[in-house]
Length: 177
Image (tube, rainbow, N blue to C red):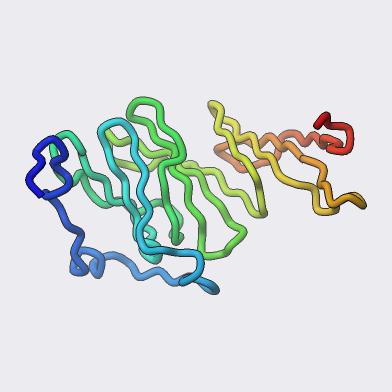
């Protein structure tokens, strides 16, 4: 493959030796069913990759076809991806070893470091939005009506402390279809 317009196609390979230098991570349960090896996400000119059991973010510069580095977040987990980004500031999403623990980390690609504060949520959710220093999280209520519909719950959290600030419940029986 010699297409020079896509330099990453021929310029790098992650070796098992590189992976063995990093802390081994094991998570309980259905690894084979939940994981298919590698996950990839991108932000601007960067490609980020993570191997399921590894809990480390590998970053490549797509334009220069070079590896920027490998970065371990403050909390180990099994799945890590770029959630969103604005300029050099990335929001990194990670599942932990528990199936109900989720984290959001701030990462600055220019400084190549994670911020000290992070957001932690325990439980199931259907949508998560980061806005400045807040996280807006939508989830389904624990119980459903006779037609199998769940109410939607919206919760507002402080990103830095993971403290719940407000909760609002939406009655899904009143929604217009």
